[in-house]
Structures are given as structure tokens and as C-alpha cells.
Figure 1 (cartoon, rainbow, N blue to C red):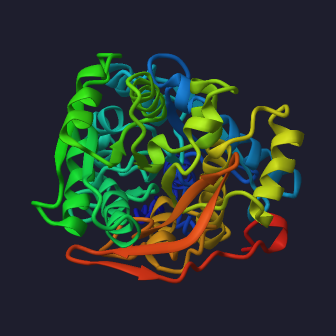
Figure 2: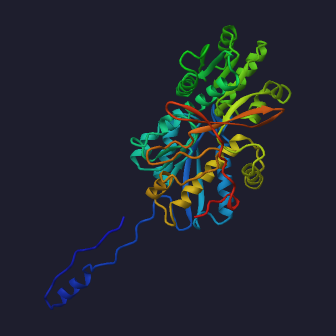
Figure 3: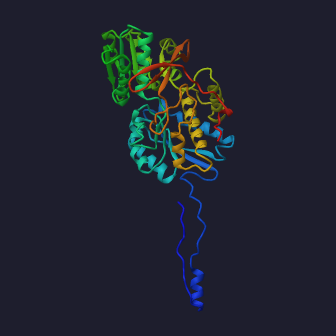
Length: 424
């Protein structure tokens, strides 16, 4: 904050004491430069995140932040953004909301981060939403499909990254209506906002009476035999999944044990082919996943972005297993770097938020970003993917979703430019 020293001393005495007093008085100073934003120095920008490096969600998501950091290291090797390198402080919250609150307070109050980036999980991040708002910390690109990150009037500094669960459910429901016409459609969903919002989207496409059966499960119970048996008995031919990867594999594996093989359509949260094969096994996984349908909004398969990210993974991430989480983490890093470049040579938290709300960010997705002053959702549409002979890729069908309609649109993939480093 700038300060003006405006007080003046007025004296007329000619004594030594008066002269000494005059010498000690303040004189008008030129306006001081504005203090740097928290987390910003002449050479660095520090951002932080909370991630499940341990705990129940670690197996599915712990690799994301390492991929983001690898992308930042790549950018830093090329000179950073506006001459500043990006430092990424990653705190393990074990997917426990109480721990999330502790580590996010550390990030803000001790590490003094410029922004919190890609905090993962609906229950975990919800626990720090008000704290970040009260401290006016940019809360960027939350790693969850909840619609709760798109409330700009209440949380003006919070922005989503994932396509939300309503969008994914609506797209899969519409795909079932368009491509699997007449088949009995059902939903298996997590018993929380994930499952509820996904079902809302499916019903947007199929209608409230368009489903044969709906089953829910709790993540605390690793047995879905009852739910799978109920859907089999109901005659379900298409099952849409609001599941994370572990429960997607559990559902498909349980159904196979029961001799039941419906068509599986999954949210992107539980639709990463390499991860699913890891759960199901190299021998049976590819067979059980043939024809598996999911959604995505980021590059995949034979794509120039994927080629770049593979190289970054080899050079800066120790050649870690490359999967959808790798692409996701690096895509988050790219979008932040793009926002930072647009925030100006001397970025502030305000200019960073303004850059995102400007509507000028492009990202690297297959559908345009939706960000604006009144919309803090990232993606309002998704592409449909399918597994064929061990390869998961887009099938060319893409849907755009709003509050009332689901519409087939042409994909608009973003070309790679400037070696994947955003230009100021």
C-alpha cells in the first residue's frame, strides 16, 4: 500500500534547539512504490495447493500435483513468466477436511502464497472456501466437478477447472439417447453431491422418467455387490457411473463376477483407462474395458499437447507413469501460467482475477473456456471418448450443456503454440 508523508514542521526560532528540531522533522517524500503482492518477488511467484498425497484418494490423484510442478519446472527452464519462475508449494491433506484447513492456513499465513491452485476434492476444498474468500486469496481451478466453485457473487475469487458433474451427466445421458437408443439406462453414483449433480445432468438429457434404476454407494464401503445385483435384476443395459476410478473398476469387476456385461458410461473422474487397467489387471482389464465410454475436455491420445507433456514428464517428472492425471496436472499448470502472463509484468491478486474474468484465456481443452465476470466455470461442454483395442480416444461427438439444453457441437481443440509456454 502506498503512503504519503504529509506532516510538516513549522518553526521560526533561530536557536540551536530549534534548528535541531527542524532537522528531525519529516519532509515530503515522493510517493512510494506499491508493495508487492503476497507471494510475488522480483524473480518468483509462489502458489500453493492441498492434495491427497496420502489417504484414501492418494491412489487415484496423488500424481496430479507432481505433474503440475513438472510443467512449472519446464516453464522455469525457459525463463518463467514475465521473468519470474513459478514456485509450487504442495501440502498433503490426506483427503481429510480438518487437515485441509490446517495446511491451507499454513499456505496463506506462513508461506504467503500468491494464490491457491487446484485444491483437490469437494469435501476438502469446501472446508476452506470461506477462509480463502475472507483473506481475498485467489482460489483457482479447483480440482472437483462440484458446481459450488461457480458462485461469483458469493465467492468472487474462486474458479473451477473440471467440467462439472451436471455437464458430464447430461453429456453421457444425451450420448445414451443418441447412440444407444431404446436400451434401459441406469445410474450408479456416489451418495453425495457428486452423485446427486451427475444424476441431475442425466435427467436433463433423458427426463425424470428416463431411467430404469438408480443406485448409490458410500466410499466407506468397498462392496457394491448389492447395487450391481439390483441393476442386473432391473434389466439395465446401459450404466452411467458417477464414480472415482477405484469404484469404476470395482463396479465393472463385480459385474463381471456376476456374469453381467452392460455398456459402461463414466464421468471423467472415474474414466481414466490406464488407471482402470491398473485396478483390473493387465490380463482382464483391456477385455472388460473394450467399448468403455467416458467424457473428457482435455487433450488425449495422439495429440501435440500430449506429445509435449510426455516429454516434460520424462525430463522433469522422472519418467513417472503417464496417464490422464499427468495431462490434467500439466493442463492446470498451463492455464495458471497463461493467467499469470495476462496479469501483467507486476501481477497483483486483483489483476490475476481480472485476467481470468476477461474471457481471453484459451487453455488447451477441446471446448472453449467459459470464464467471465458472471461465470466461473471452466468448461461448459465435454467430448465423448471410447476405448477400442486398448486405446482411449475421442469419438468425435462433443456436447455443450447449459441450464436447460444439451446440444451436439463441433470440438474446438486449441493448437500448441510457443512450445507450450504462454507468451505475455
